[in-house]
Length: 301
Image (cartoon, rainbow, N blue to C red; front, side, top):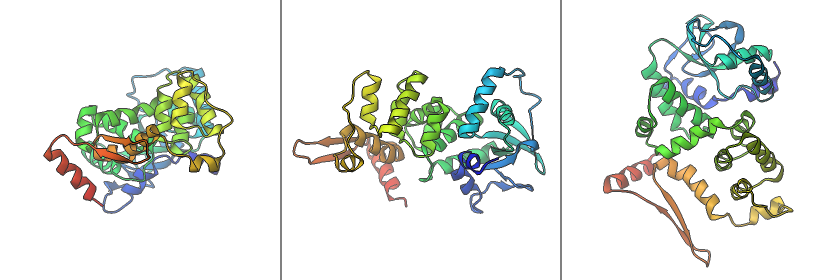
């Protein structure tokens, strides 16, 4: 397998780094993988789950997924159960597993679990989500794993991680984007704000068409929204130096502050700007207890 594919398949480094730390590791395995982390496993060491109720897989769909994996790598790691030294059994992701075999991959990224470790997995994922170095796709995948593997609703997840339900929904919706756009978010080619705007396009062909323009023309979030509405955007584009000096729009500031401050504090952030260029950033709270909660979070290092 080429080093390029290995690099593109390395989604989940944040979780791996967390669990390889002796202070936060769930438990270490006797093999090469760390239980609870994302590890690159030899595909030959993984066996299919004999109890999987799904036994048939459409060949053409597998071929398309295989081609996507060859280009972008596996966006969402498999989940496996450790059976013994260097032996694993699939828990979820059999389509990705079969498509990876078809693509000729020798290694695949996988979450490693042991029996009856749901509580430990939940604790590790919740702690991991609080990290600041995760990209939006890693956050989205962590949310989805908590919901699927720990049997949580979005409301329950919201309470556990002190994030608004709307924030959780926005992240999970990213998993509906085409693989190439998810890879773009993962590789920091586009921002969370760009990705959220692309989700609202709905139609996959339109999403991919606009995504290609975002990369080629460095479009803003507002320009994506205009394209989705069928509006024309001004051309030619400003040079990169002009874009750096141009004032940021209120809608883009809203996206930025909501991602980096509002979501972290689970609070609504408003930006008010006056004609003379001055303005205010308003952080809203619902009660004195809510204010104390926000102050406590702000004081955390």
